[in-house]
Length: 474
Image (cartoon, rainbow, N blue to C red; front, side, top):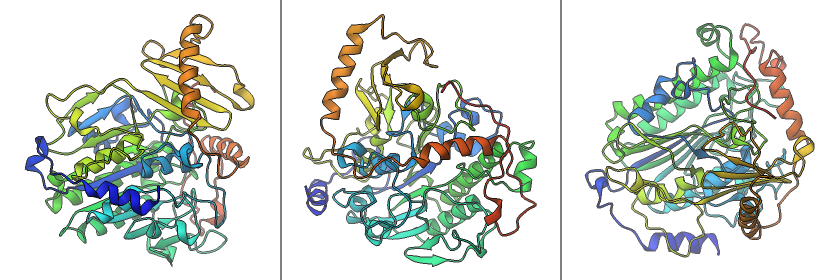
């Protein structure tokens, strides 16, 4: 279905919230905050010694989901699904977008983004930070429903200004390059930009997609954060990320917008081997829990009960229909969105989320979860094609393979997966071999590697060493 027709269908049926949201504005502000490569246990709400009080406060003032998933174990496809509300395999965005400015490599133009729909509903739509969904002009945020963009297009970059070399001038304001000299540390800078947009958007509803590259490699920190983290680089970067989230929350308070804003914080996928994914098995690039399960918290004062904990599985696909409902847009029955509206389940007396089946695929790796059972083919050079069956309720660390003991369950979940996989489009581009090498490089940096100091403009006083535990079995 053409994008314009799909958007029109979504907007034909609009409704005003009549349940517990009736006291709120008809069109609340919506902020999605996405971190990058963080480990499941890198936050104090999940037991980390690293203090993350501002991120934790979103859970304290709203809800924390303990079984929240990304749709992919790597960056670009996970973001494609998040912004479209559809499994990325349906439109061929199965792998990371290859590097370079290719006219055909990017989030397909056939897809309707949440920014398209909210923009047409009267929202100012703002994208800040990492894009990683295509670098050609027709793939840029401002061509995909965003009225404003400040950030970078590639999958990663350093945290200090870059004035020379191939990565110089990677920041864009809308479509115009911006010199790197105007900031000290990128995580703080992106938060400051978010605050500026909030201050400039107090007269109407806005949607903000704030995609930090923290705590993706290279592991660059400020001296102050590194000292506060006792020399642990990733902990220092997490402290900076928490501070940045706090700036956004403080801006909402300062302008009287907290009650009228739905705020979500989630990681894009599981953490790398350098991060702490405990007690989960695996890491970024794998389809074990450590590659897929993510920190996920949400708040909307007066609508979502404070301090709720939801244990039923959810997935980042749910954010699209949830945002539609918050904005008073009734999803057309013909729209092929793959998630559910979470809001009816989060108010006082709301129903539990019904059991459903969740799916993942990346090349020869795939997994399916139904209830507490998860069937997984690890794939890759190490994992092979052997099917593994886990009971996540009793084996969160995926250490006991039940496939030989429960062949009926293996057959049932395999049939579910095969029916889902039959809906896929062919991948629009091939998996890039460098992805595995990048993961290995990130692991070395986290344990003391040099990162890309050569492009940091002489900031030799900053630290980038780390000593994190490796998360899970790989």
